[in-house]
Length: 270
Image (cartoon, rainbow, N blue to C red; front, side):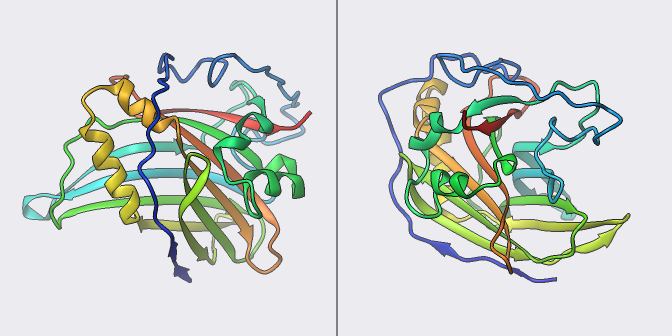
């Protein structure tokens, strides 16, 4: 199995005087005001798997799990783990199909040049594009000692044996500030090819960003900063350069006692 990562470019701390005046409930039928239309896709249980139309994935590649976390080593080699964000995939036929948002509504939150969201969407395939709104859980004590590990783990599955390349771009005010590129070969498990990008270290920019965010005195201030902070994750076939999945992430701070929450949307263009 191969696993490599590279970082490119650091830049500024995003801040805006405009505040999110929204509730932090992930079951809302819209992302920001004003609400955008929803376009459910009709699926017949006997014709498609339960995750199709209800989770992130296509017939070629599916996201099984995604998490960003802080891990502390305690006494006696015990570890504690805090999830800033977490996304699993356990969709059933009883779940609602994903709502749709016009991709043009968020073009300005991501790079516009080659390799940006607009360029990628124009090349397609459109069914590979998703938006995730995270309500991040910052209710933890941050540590700068050497025992603290900030990491990201992703798990994908496919029916195809290929090498994937996963690009993660952190953006501020719609401009890329840092990018990490990783490649992964699969393991064949339970008649599926599983791609694990496990415990990938968070870049210095992201660790500093979390610390600065945590030090803000009010959550509305954190949300003001997060309004201009986005992440674009693009998974491609490394050999053919085909886009397999493209996930746009936007964020607010969770006010829930139940930790991190999320809502998933399909990106469409009418």
